[in-house]
Image (cartoon, rainbow, N blue to C red; front, side):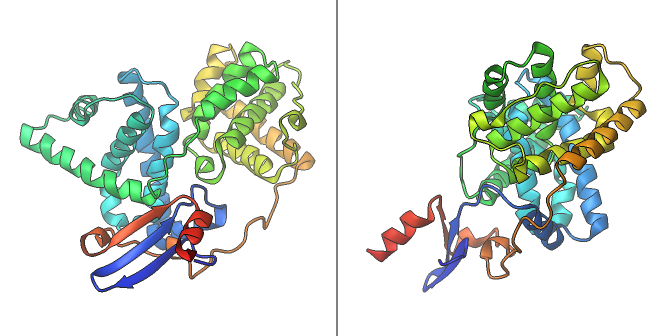
Length: 339
């Protein structure tokens, strides 16, 4: 397959596709997919608004179902990848809530919270004050089941997903963070789920980004002294480009969205009750100071290869006239076909 992530193989029965899993995308690849499959700036803005609306509802639903917030990690990952790789944006935008429920249902199963889909839909409809007939509920269930297959294809049926929260707990214990520092780190991690960072970076990077952002914020908005952590102890560099970009992205997220974040509620619980506008100004100062010490890297990633079929429009009906083989490991496949 040389440098290709996917390969088409013609056959007498139809078209067979070999699709190599790519669990993480670069920022340029995400931008390319948005432009290709979502559209212009107005459509991307509409997607962002619907994503926020969907996850504000899913957060309420997760609490209603008494599930831990960490379930949103995989849910957000699936939801965002679906919109990046699906080629029917007009339909998908209308179904944004159904797509969110599909992502939640898959995430529940991945986290061993087994609930019947009908039960989840009933709770969802009750929370939205929707009163559906049995026939309408069955139609809704069939829609979710159909979306589930497409959503799993968008991630190449790759279930290797590590829990960020588990890693954050280990890191906060290892670096001996206080209870307040750990709580703010956890709140920031919950907000991180809803950014594009889960699409770009592995779990241990995102856990460190949440912890590092928390310590910077606490040291700037209170009399809390900065808790220095030596990342070399876990074989990571403080000037790691991914970590720097991640902290910049989280601070930007709070500058733009602070009133609707988990961090806002956490600040009130630790008795930091500054006005949101005042805190946003402080976040901006933190970002400026951090940028002076660690400038945001530029030009880190290579361009998107035009020949790579992973980034070309996907035929969701391919399974009806051909087949797809999903692969985790390129080397094993090459060894197999060379025999």
